[in-house]
Length: 232
Image 1 (cartoon, rainbow, N blue to C red):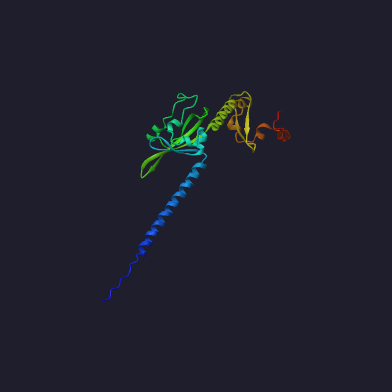
Image 2 (cartoon, helix red, strand yellow):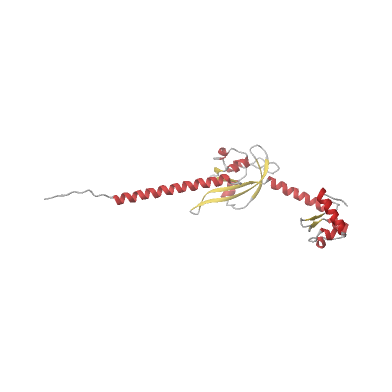
């Protein structure tokens, strides 16, 4: 009797297992790459971005958020979201915490809120923030808050309102024209002095409204370009 024994090689199974490991490794590397990319985008954002868990504690914050609030970036992480946002001076609730977690839990999403906050150094400033949910499988897993310092914008708006008030109520007749010398606006005093209503002059060249002599117009414009102002 002749008996022959040979080993059975399961090379196919080994190859399949190795391919699965390679695929899983590639998937993990891709997730890590996307995570790094997302982190870089968040860190480079011009708006403050803060991630909050369901318990109301900050899990992630970008450098802009830390700069706006004048707080240490690492100290922000783990802090309660309400504790990080304090009403500034000039408000009824000055020195008190905002009820941000309550707003998050009530679903007050995607609505820009204006508020006066106080920074870590005690300086108050005007801010805007928006809340949005983080969801996974249709379940809310946390919240994202975006924040902007709008102090300069508010200051500019205030100055514009003041300028508009002065423009409308000064006793001097004022006329505004664009670079093409087309009249864009006049004030009440201009109408009182000249008898011309806005509908009669807006859109017309100030040459046709103010000058009846071509030479006077040319000489006036020449002097205006030299000195930046002219009286006649």
